[in-house]
Length: 567
Image (cartoon, rainbow, N blue to C red; front, top):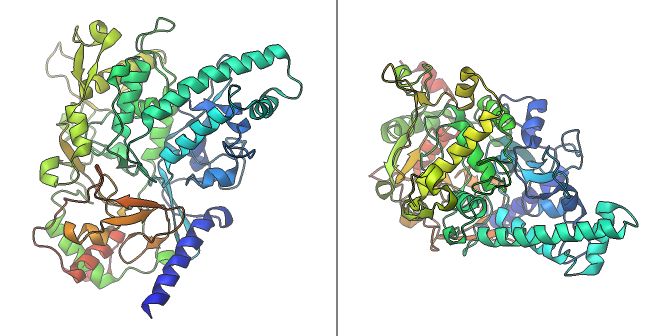
């Protein structure tokens, strides 16, 4: 086929694929979930408080009278629409992961927030088919969405455009609201808008992250040490965005996150809630110390549902048959060159005697970031950051006025968890279950079980690669567009590519990358975006070997005829 014809076809698939989100129902792969469980995962609140719920539904876009919550407008940021429109759990037909909190607060009522499904539910398209991948990273552009929402909040403010605010107030309060009701709403709105604008400014990176990425660690630390503690001097700009990790196998892994700092699921998920506009008291006298908006029982349920999620198998009926001989050659290469870091079935497990309940977890490999050679900014920012302890110095940090950021992070999250769980009156067995049994046995008759201690903050995690075909772009910062380039020397990788398209490249395994309106230009020469490192194996693969390994990674659990007949 002529090269221009190929290019035209690729562009058409790109545009077609992006239009499918509203016009074609997705194909759901068998990942161990029922339809009902999936709906609960999509719309169960976890304590995030982004904006009052009725306000969000009533807000106009900054530049028009159209509602901000218009489904097509929300979809333009990459959020996934509901499968069948409104439902009992999602009565207003909001995107996946947009959830209504269960708690009524004075003057604002219930709040809209995110849950984990917003950033950990993916989709891809292929030649007119739309595939939903539960647990894969979202390709939504969170940064652009929050900037637009902040702009809209200011544009609808009573101090900005009285006509917009009047229409907003009529939607919230009904026709002909009393002057008192308008006054209360106006004051509440201005108070919220002031705080919200500052928070979004704090979360805006100097270099745009684009779809599917966020500097989660910096934003979490800012939420904890600036917003909740109330110390502006603790602020640091988010400058090292990373891709959202996929969720399948997460509850079974020894350590999670790009740098393996987390094992306890309730602590990990609490930090995630506080990062996405959850609230906690780190020194105010108006509520109990370390009280928070976190819905711990819901977090526990969400983790149980994730534990039932299985990795997505390569759907041959939709994406094409696996080439058996090539798969077998790729399996041999992977076992020779990659298995030492990337644990694959049958998994190498931790020892039963290392856990208080005899539980075993899938081992992960840890590699110093300098050895990995990938972009160092993510690790360097965490390792080099400290935080002032303010009102928590005496109660939590033995009088230390400044501590390493990682220490502040783990200590405040742990205290928030302990405060939250104390109100649930859990038995010892239930408490262990909430923490995923991440405790080591007591070492003496008078000692207590010890929680797992994280390894070095300068390590990166190498974990299992089941389902990796559905999770591009690659590396922790999403700087490599496809697996073919990841298996190539760094100087052969794209310096610039385009992100936001969902059409799958089934040959190189990644999303089709062509310049088009609405897509994000990823420049690997910008700070935090380097595509260096992961130079494995030491002797680079040739073209055929790369394609062999890719064929294996389409479905590592596939059993080829060759494999079945090999003695």
